[in-house]
Image 1 (cartoon, one colour):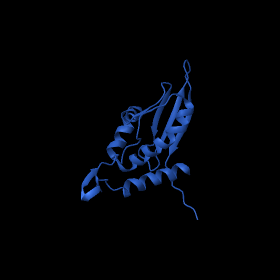
Image 2: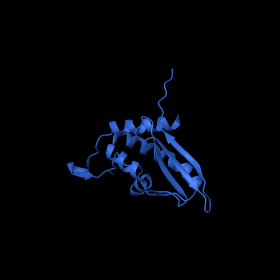
Image 3: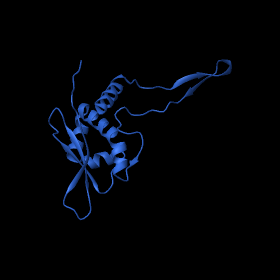
Image 4: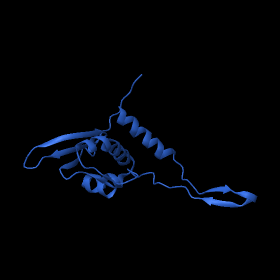
Length: 142
C-alpha cells in the first residue's frame, strides 16, 4: 500500500509539475538580476547515481526507485520497451547500479499489473533468492 501511495504521488507530481523558469530578483535601485533555479527532468527515476553494494542497500533504496520505474512504464511506452528488453541495462543507463550478484526481471509486461522482481544469486549456486518485488495493484476502499 505504501508503494502504491508513493507511485500515485509520483504520477501526480509528473502531471502537475510546471516547468520552472528563471526568476527575476530585485536588487537595490530597480536593478533586476536573473536567478537560475535547478532544473530536474520530470521523468528521471533518480536524481543521483546509486551504486548499491549489498542486499540491505537494495532493500532500502530500490523499492522507491522501482516505484518510479513502474510509474514511468505506465506513461512512457519507449521506456517500457527498453526496460522490457534489458531491465538492468536500463537502470544503469538511468544511474542505478545493482551489486554483481543481483539480477532484475520484468514479469507480466503486457498485463495491467506488471511486476519487477530482484533476485540474488550466490556464487557456486544454481538457485536464485528473491530479494524483493514490486507490482502495480489497484485497491479500492471505503
